[in-house]
Image (cartoon, rainbow, N blue to C red):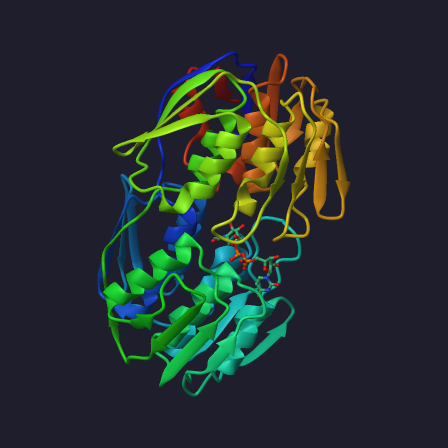
Length: 416
Ligand code: UD1
């Protein structure tokens, strides 16, 4: 299946069970390399990025099995290998293997990580932090190498609260000699989940959830199981979407709203009435989107990953809106595709202005990254006639089955 075809929708009604989190499970998969044993991860999303990470772990002779949302990783017989460029370039999160591989084998060779094309996405903070932990880093022809006699704890201040760099450095620090203090770290839910997982493996970490992590290195960690949290970005996609079309939707699997408070606030501002009951978020709207000024930011602010969806939703408003992006410098790739559908959007530096009162036309549009692709599906809900989204392998990297989810709400949508 290479494309999704979706027809204009007048109302949404039904339930969606929210899949397990992609951005939480990927670093936790990398972390299993720090221990020797069998780890079972429950509520694992059945998505392409997880499959690629399994392949990368298998290159290091781990055994993996993903079945019915249960992922088993056996690291008892892992041994060092250089990671092939063809795989690492497919997955930005392959960079998260740097810390664990160095911790385990004191050397690493890995193709420069790939992933979605959103801005430059440098990894200087990962590399700078590892260098401060006594790693010699080199890079030649797209291949990164690292060597160390031993990882040494250090006091390091991240110049920006990068999620990936925080994850890499905290993993490396768990087995470094002495104490590591990481200042100015990211506080995203994915960091909290990773730190708690590492603690369950035997790591000694203080300050979880704050901007300073203090890690006392230990020599060995053990395997541990993990029950994955729901995917806050997938949940957020459907919460924002609910503003566009008259609806009554229940999102199932939301057992805790700590990680999505700001998304709930924005969805409410857009016009969605949200009530939480047990593990379900009940959402209802009359399909009239309120415009305004919105801004992305580091957690607990509104997540950058939902920016493309927010743009698609705001086009449906009768009012004009402005959205400011503060994390990535090139997250507006959706704009060209939405213009093809009749949207009036202008970009000025890191702000996009959305002219309200425009009615979208169905069109063939191209997915160029994961979240942009999902946002095009959302836009397709209100494009007159049919919208076809091509290049959907990007969407499948993070959304288990967006067609299944929207069909459950009565949408006329198919893989083609
Ligand atoms: C993670 C998420 C991604 C989310 C992003 C921000 C995963 C798998 N991905 O990506 O969905 O959009 O957090 O919440 O969890 N930067 C540097 N140097 C570095 C590292 C980052 O300059 O060494 C910059 C990046 O270019 C970007 C910003 O910092 O502009 C944020 O990046 P970062 O937080 O590292 O994002 P990721 O971990 O790649």
